[in-house]
Image 1 (cartoon, rainbow, N blue to C red):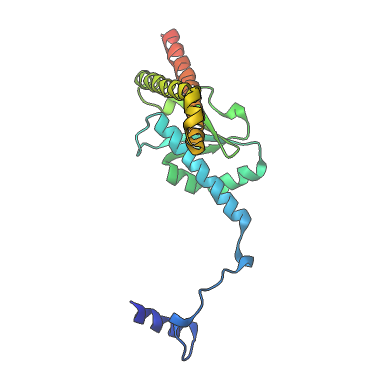
Image 2: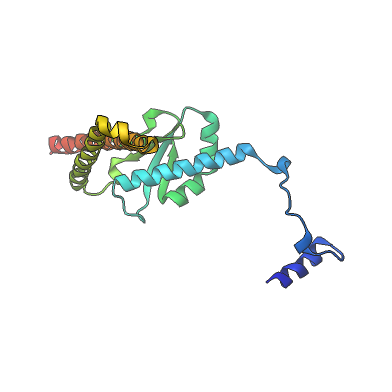
Length: 204
């Protein structure tokens, strides 16, 4: 409602006879921009995304709270994580967030990922039905391998490379690399989970 905006502009901005419709857009005050704070919050968001992705990979129910360990080699990054611990816990649905000063504090059996120079560890004890999870991930690994093989075959086709637009070829190369990265991530998770199963069998 433009007439309300006009009235508020006159009331709070202390303007006289002018009109907001004739005013220039306000300019940002660059001296108020805190680039360090912006970079810090971007790192926090990337780590939250990494935790959520790891939870999803391990089939954790969205509302199930879990314990997560974070480890970095940077004291300043550790300080940032500690200062934003509540945000990390709330937005990542965590029961506990431990910022480990050394690797000895991290459980030996844990799946992990790395985001923004921060290692994220999810202890195996937080997972449900590991054997079923392994079965699902083996099927996913097979599916991803087929996709990568198909893309590699396409990129080795001279006719395709000669006739396809450059942007299509580039997109296929990026798809191939993304597939390989995904394959490697699943493989590493499977290695950890299978060790847990073997350890459980030997303990019986």
